[in-house]
Image (cartoon, rainbow, N blue to C red; front, side, top):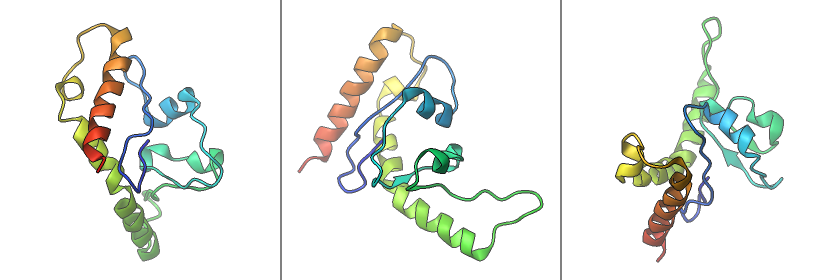
Length: 125
């Protein structure tokens, strides 16, 4: 979770092994304030049922292609989400996330949070 205005990383969630993004979000029980706008990618389909102010891009189906309005809305959401994607890219510079993690699982959370703090320090003026 990142702040759109500052680009800082606010929260991170992870689990052991592979897990879908939305399933991890549900498991983490992250509380979102009612007035906060949550921008997510298409992996979070169904987030609008849990949070009223969430926006996810529309997916096309085999029988229902996207209209021009849907494409424009998806493009607008993508332009707003780019800050979060840049934050993820800053984290992936570190070897901890770019390769398979082979150390103790208990220490992964601490190390990941330290990397987030380093990235946040770089973003502060």
